[in-house]
Structure formats: structure tokens, C-alpha cells
Image (cartoon, rainbow, N blue to C red; front, side, top):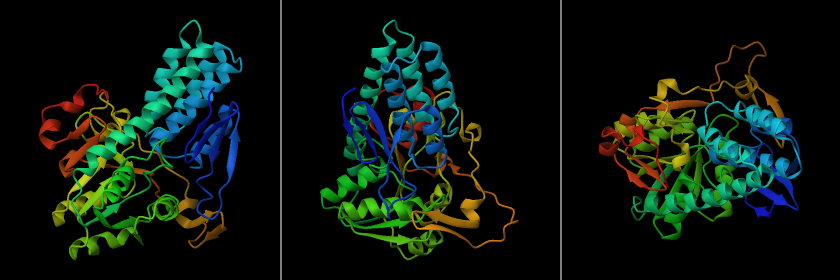
Length: 343
């Protein structure tokens, strides 16, 4: 397999490496991934995260295992195990469906590697297209609020919502980016802040509970979020806290945009109520851990509710920015998401 060098994903000399996003920004640790069980552990602990990146990493591992001589039966089992790793993000399912098609061919050992590389190149192109369409919605001098991490750490390319911000900044339109800290594991504070700093884009980190006050003072011109799944009615599952931001934006008259590739769309899922929501470990709420170590602040026996995602109703979304273009509320009402999308 040819080499790949992305922000948080590498293939070097037929070896797959992932950047440990748990350790950022204090440490840059690269782990080699050789087995399905290793990758599943990395995905569940959020060392590998971001809906597009999860799907791509799984596909690349399968492609490499096929090239290394793993049997069709073993690959089918590996594919099934990877499918169950994260229930909410649909990119994993969409990518593995294509890997399954490659596995069904006579020359699957070569076909799976080619398909995995094709998925990576497609993701990069999708990110560029999303950025181009989204930047047209950003006005000069904008103060933008973003949630979670949707940049190069979450994709093979420049990112989705953060890719839009990156492109708009390059065009001289971005005055300020408000970065919500974002549960779980403070991904906005650790990852998005780091990415924006690396890109020299001006940002200010805020606690998630501060967004309402900023909007009330007129200091937010638009909210940009990503998506882990877009249902057939336009409802969007995304990182926990996204729904609250959409409600706040609606109340304060602030545009709320969702940026995602068409691979995040699930026409078979009727609405947000049917999207499975992953529950995460209580320790992510009762304390914090990272490259610096661990700290607990809540009682050890505290009852904890810790969903990783919530669902934002389509009625609260101003527009969906996909690689195919900007989708309006009118198009959603007309059923654009009720059929499969193509890039």
C-alpha cells in the first residue's frame, strides 16, 4: 500500500500509525496499529476519533490485513467487529460497506487496499469541497463559534466545520473563533484550540456554559458544527452539547450551520430518534485525564449520565453544508435527505 501522511493518520512502509488524540496537546504519541482489537480499543478510548477518521482508519487496517494475506473468513469477522466499535458515527458503516464490496471480489487482497486508498483520497476531496461551499456563508469580520473538533485531526484532509473556518480565515473573513471546551474529554479545549493555534487562526477558549452570554451580547455571528450522522429528515447527531448551542443560536437569531461529507448521511435512518447514542464511562465526568495524568473531583460513588452525542432537530439548523453544496431548509422539507446522496 502506498504511503499516507495525514495530521493524525499515517501509512508508512505498509504499517498503520495513529496519533494518540488522548495525549494532545501535551504529547504527540504515535501508535502502530496491527490488529482489529488494537484499533477498537483506540477508537473506544478516543485515541482515534472523528467520524470520517474512524471510518478511514478501519478501512486502511482491513486493506493492510488483506494485503498481508488474511483470509476472506477472517476479514469478514474483522469487518463485523469494527462495525460494532462505535454505534453513532455512520461514516464507519458507510466506509466498511464499500470495503465489504471489495472483499466480495475475486482479487480481494488487492481490491481492499485499493478501496481504502480511494476512500482516503475521496475524504480529502470532500473536505476541500465542503470548505469551498461553507466559506461562501462566512461574512467578512465574522466571529464564529465551533464545538468539538472537526479539523485535520478528525479527517484525512483539512476537516469539515473547521475546514470551513480555515478556508474563510485564509480569505480574510474570520476575526475571531470561539472554541467550546466540549465533552467528552474536553476535545475542543485540547484539540481544536491546538489546531487553530497551529494554523495561526485567532481563537478564544470558553467553557460550554459561556456560549449563551456571548450570544446575548451579540459576540457570535454564526455557529459551525460537524455531524456524526444526518438522518433522512435532516436531524443531526453530533457531539454532546451541539443541541444546546442550536437552541441558543435559534433564540438569539444566530445562524447555525452543519458541515459534513455526504458519507455522514444515513437515508435509512428516518429521524434523530432512531440514531443510537453511545454512553461513555462515568470517569470522564467525575474527573479528567490526559497526557498530564488524572484527577478526580467528584465522589467516587456519584451517579453519572454521560452520553457522547445529542441530536439537533432539523428545524434548528440554518443550512447543511456538504461536499455537494449548501442544502437549505426548503430542500430538506422537500425530501433531499430521504434518498442517497452522491458527491
